[in-house]
Image 1 (cartoon, helix red, strand yellow):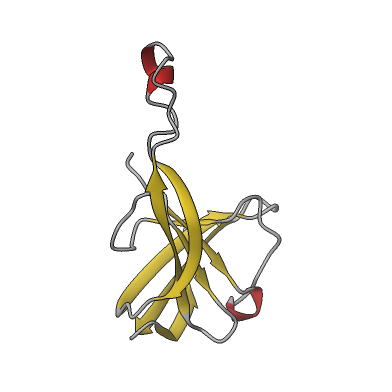
Image 2 (cartoon, rainbow, N blue to C red):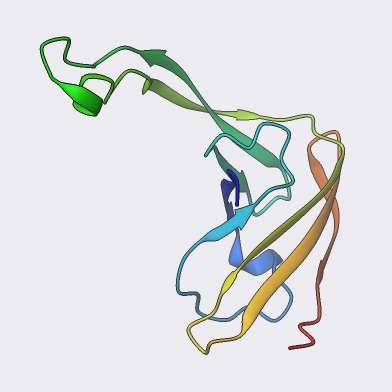
Length: 119
């Protein structure tokens, strides 16, 4: 299995969009740490940056003691300069698997295509 990131994509950029059950996931971003990305309507790629603080309860017992250790605070969106491809995927309400590949140069999408699901 492994970690993945979430990615939101402006619907008008998608070839053959359908209503989705959930948002898109990807394993193609550099960090893969349950991060959040956006491809905005102008084709730019943004990443949610944040600081981490320890909000754990030192008086708790067992695993509850570590809950909140890496709490994300001061969340903000920053444009990336990523160059490469990102494959992202999800399931549509219809049950169809939706998978796309987007290509970027310096954080700007140059191409997007839907991958064909061969069942």
